[in-house]
Amino acid sequence: METQIKFVVVGHHSRREMATSLAALLNAHLLIDEADHGANWNHRRALVWAEEQDVRVVVLEDDAIPVSGFAELANEWLSRFPDTLISFYLGTGRPPQYQLEIATKLVLSDKNRTDYITIPRLIHGVCYSVPPQHLPKVLTRWSHSKAADYAVGDAYGGPVLYPCYSLVDHADGMLAEKPKDNMPRLERRKAWRLNGKANNATTQT
Image 1 (cartoon, rainbow, N blue to C red):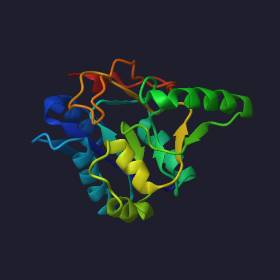
Image 2 (cartoon, one colour):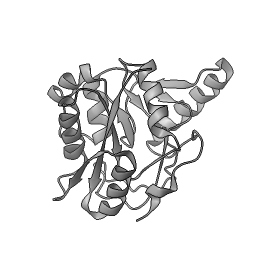
Image 3 (spheres, rainbow, N blue to C red):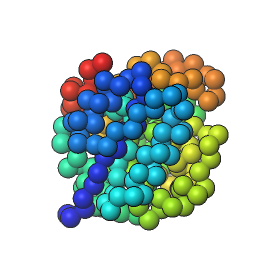
Image 4 (cartoon, rainbow, N blue to C red):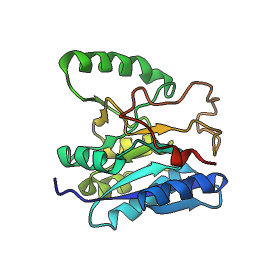
């Protein structure tokens, strides 16, 4: 397993301390949205940075909570699936229209003894990695009007792999910006299943 990876944290200025703590934990590049440009703008900025790197990049939002051994575990998954968009977070609550599909696929995965599921779309921006060879296409096809996760996945244009046991949890705090759909986020937004214990060092605010 020779895959080498880098990390980039996208953060909002209102959660600067959380973003800085996470970036320090992972020795990650940090991109703070200082002027409320929005998640779509900052995620695209992260992918532009990723395209400039000579290794695969994992993007994390400032409220991601990595499990212990996150970097090594992420490296293993990326080595297994070098050509696939991977989301290291599979969450409850949002988006509501995907929750039944997730539950059904997790049950089937348990039955078939597989360790991941696929969904046709990227439904979370908490933590993901786009294969380097797909970055030019993603950036070219980027929609500035979509939520960041949909913008990434729809521009990628293929199924997304989700480990059954997420490598990050979600802090699920106050929203840093108004959702594009204008709908309140009342559901519990945490990982369906978590690989080991999340690292509490990133929960400080």
